[in-house]
Image (tube, rainbow over all chains, first blue to last red; front, side, top):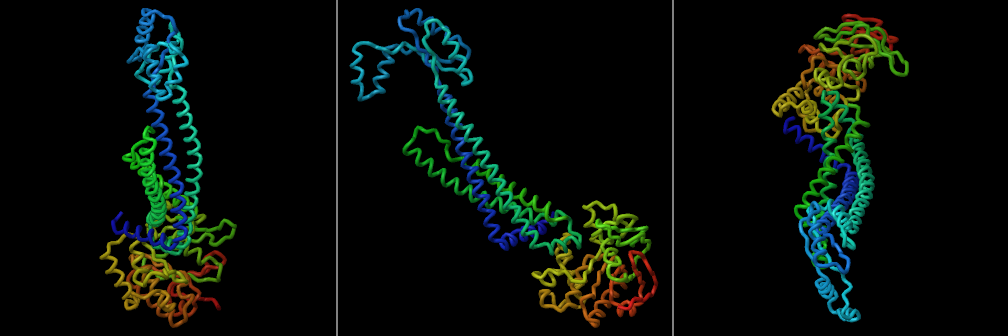
Length: 295
Length: 228
């Protein structure tokens, strides 16, 4: 294809966009809305995933021991724990240390503990770290079987709930996105249909003088792609701005929330959105060209 | 140049437009296709540029078997044909120059070729001074001359015209016919469907009369032969 021909296609596409101003606007808006929501879901799902895996990587197993074990018996349990596959670190936390940590956490309300007098109800425990998160569950179950072990707990539930939430958001988001994408597709294909109709005379003449089908199709395809890309661009700009504000707010008030930093995260999502928008545009015009232009 | 061998055209609704037509139009011929309305003239014209497909028989145009062309080959058949319609079919929002240049643009001719060739054909039809005008500012005859310029700008081997003088007064029709005659003198084959008795009788060219879907008459230096 010659450069001049490409110029001609672009010029034709742009003039069509202008001529059908209102429809073009509607198309761009629909695409922008759909992609904005797609973008928001992507941001949400990826952040939830990120949170879940951050938490998961911090997961450790707390192994509580029965009261009244001898030092030897306790050391025995410790050795057996070390031999479980995947275990990388074992720390002993005695009753006294557990109590002092507890006091620290209570802070100014330590006075509450006075009611206990000299008694220390906290058990001796091991804190165990495992190399891979998939092994946490199995390791905890193995430890529970050991003689002298009261219980082995880990943050499994929180992690599982987070993953369940991510999954729900993902499914829900997917349904909404599919519907919105269909709406965008419909609007774009309608816009192109109107353009094809407005230019049917020209198309007829082009056919009579021997223009190839692709020569006739290109301007319409480009028009659809421009609509899709334009919509995506609006969504991307909006998303970028909003995420920047969100990150800023979170860092100021909820600093512990592990949000994914804005760059390159949003840049990557922008690329996905722009490509999706352009593809939706191209698809929309293809549908119209198939149906309304017998070339 | 154009060769029909037992060609029939039956439309989907059962209407028989042409039946068992066999004829030959050699290169450089000037042929009038005449006959009553609805006898099959337009179908005959449409078959040649593959607007319609023959139902039966073999149709060869410029060496191509039209009935067996792939859809993607149709544009290349048409690049060798120039087509002129009764209603001119110019683009109202393009100037005269742009209308003619358009036919070269869509087959991706170079800018220099376009400039040279468009000026030349506008000269040929005597309208170079109207190059910057829009079709709406031109008379019917002038518009048809522009349409002819567009039809011949890509150097077709055959020019096909469907009632080119149907909307024009006799005097203007004559001017148009003179242009066609000149194009024909340069070696281009011309096939023209027409109702214009005066023109046909005066030109003394080959006349093919189609009646009731068949060739009723095929005369060298023929006459129109109907009283309408």
